Image (cartoon, rainbow over all chains, first blue to last red; front, side, top):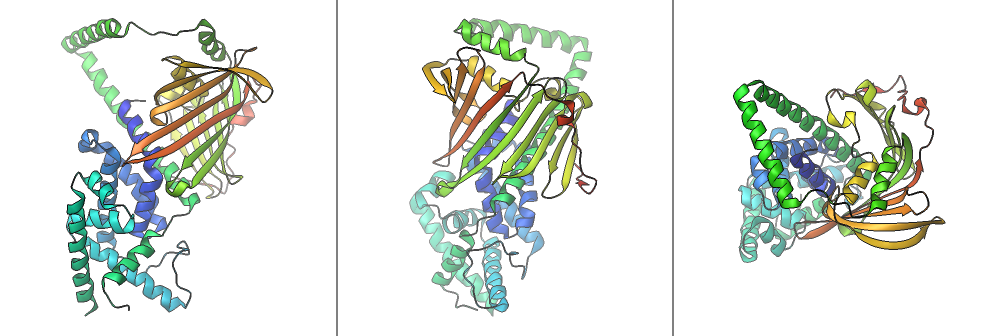
Amino acid sequence: MIERQKKILQLLDTSGPRLHRLLARLTRREDVVGDLLQELFLRLWNSKAFDKAEDPFAYAYRTAINLAFEWRRQQQIRNQPLEGNCPVVQDNSSVLGKMVQAEELEQILDAILRLSDLTRDVVVMRYIEQASYEEIAQRLDKEPQYMRSVCSKAMARLRELLASEKV
Amino acid sequence: MSKIDEKEIKRRFEVISRFEPSPEVTVRDLERARDNLIERTTDWQKRQQNIWRIIMKSKITKIAAAAVIIVAVILGLTITGGPDIASVTWAEVIEKVEQIPALSFDMTTEITYPGNEKLTIQSENYVAGDYGTKSSLYMNGEVFVVKYRLPNKNLAYIIRPKDKTYMCIDLSDEQPAKGQDTDDPRTWLKMILSGDYTKLGHKTIDGIEVEGIESNTSGIAGKDTIMRLWVDIETNLPVRIEVEGQKMEAGEKRPHRFLTENFQWNVGLDESIFEPNIPPDYKMKER
């Protein structure tokens, strides 16, 4: 087995579950995550930048975010709640309530699509993956303070986007 | 619809961040990604081999390639001093297991997820030089994948009983089909014994007195993999192989642990074990 093949398979073994979970959260569709995961690793295999990446996981993570939002762009999902595989969703009222909540989650994920690449990556790491500013800064090779500032501006932009969507 | 303020946005993010795909789906998708990656990258290697064949057809490039190989071999031998297997007894272990035509063993794979959640996959494995390999993978006591590698037929099968699907893979020209691959624990033995290792002394496993060695190498579980080999002091045959990887990723260590045990060396394996016997209602998935 050649070294490069081994490197990518090792990444799949060690980080695959985490990347899979990230894709699941960003697409909210368990039925498409498998295909996206395959696509992700084929992209890494074909990427020269991946070979040069100092932190292969960080590179794969950003590629996964791009891939998930590319998919969202193509799909523009609306009103497709998870098919009984989101047990933590706190909605015990009605079918309508679930639909509203699903719509709200889709709305915010679609709003992230309209942020710049860096801001989108930071928002996903901070708010969806619950990473600390220090960890995000380390992964993106930036200062933690700058990450904090990006998040603050992103939040303001998201408020704007969501408010305008409501009108 | 809720009022859109920062608190509401964070609440929605929180809901999204709490979603965890089911372990079954995760394992299934990871397995498929792995199969797909191996298939594609093996195709790529075949293409590279074809390029090499084209190079070797030209007289000038053939001479140049030969010169490069000779220089590389001379430099390699000068720098490394060649392979060094420290102990004759340990060297005999490889010699002995390589003469064994068939074996079976169990393997437990444990992956630690964020939040210290653990995923455990168990497998029953059969290896026979005449027929190939068979692995049945279990999770929560239920078989979810059965793999066959049949070098003599140049075929491999991946069967998923739960989905009632299977894949058939052509192994023609694939290198692992011709010899041992990573499914065969003898490949691991070679990895452990081909480098530096430390002796762990004696202990008893399942009533058998064993002697162990430990090797720290870049192995199947990432950088700084620790591999331990425990060998029966009477038979010189392995009793247990432990592999532990602690790969650093984005500031976190993600542990993988493989425990290979219950070896049956030189066991009689009937050819029928390696017969996929796919039920007629299973659908074949296209590659």
